[in-house]
Image 1 (cartoon, one colour):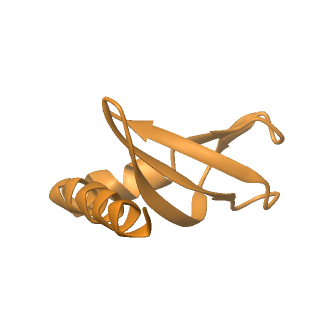
Image 2 (image 1 turned 45 degrees about the vertical axis):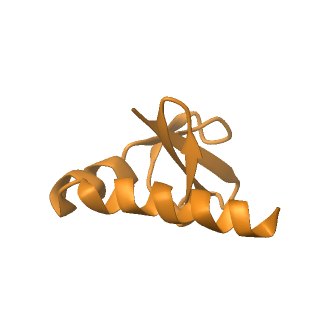
Length: 72
């Protein structure tokens, strides 16, 4: 099963890297944190498959709690 997870991560990362750099930076800075109740920047994130697109799962730059950004 681990091999399948690596394949999924590779596929999600490929989709993420297909997005232009400036748009990726905008997406990283436009994540809602339910603890801060504000739009924040995501840090230390991983890119995962999430129908119908991909998800960034990481931490809030302000408070350090978990946040996610879904991208179609």
